[in-house]
Length: 272
DNA sequence: ATGTCTCCTACGAGGAGA
Image (cartoon, rainbow, N blue to C red; front, side):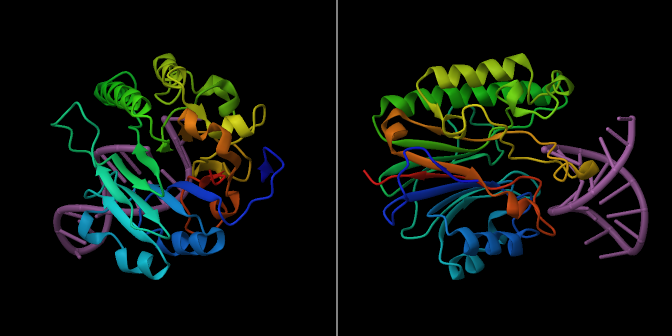
């Protein structure tokens, strides 16, 4: 689905930014390459690569026309930023505030004058427990860093798998998720406090009242039943609000063989 | 509670994480 918010047809100058939780960059390489070729995003934030740095498929991605920077880790997590026309200029590869945190969940780079933060917020289940505590700490650090970015007066996009169901509209059966780490009150209120800083939830902005899901688990034909969640988000700094012209979810890719449990999500920004 | 998928260890099946 494609809706042009301002009834402007997209031009070559528009910048398409996507986020995609892959669930294994190597297991998913054919799907990733097929999707890149089909949709040709300018910038891509990847999460859950589940591979150490030396196993990042740099050559295959370069052959597809993309420069890349990445921050991987054996078995779990892992984030990357790809860009078509220039190499992303890395700004940071971890969130400030907890030096002993060794999980690869954040990467930040400048591309075409925009600061791109690529994040994979902890899942946090089971809740309560140490994993949920880690999610809350990570979220607190992220909120503090987001405030710093807003005060920097640079256009910023924070894209990724937030593992947050923001509202009841964002879950197929919200009553089943109330105790879950993706939907607990603390998590929803943390996300709201982020928005209260001045960020725009781009997908919800383009589709104010519609059911839009980005994740469908592998069980019980969740995708076929549209039993999904909206947990992959784009937050835009105020500089970019007027440039947001379109957004969507590439549901086609979720239907492919050997695909991720997340669908790619994208936004399009008009040239300044 | 269940269901499915990926990666890891270490050679085969099971655990962890999502």
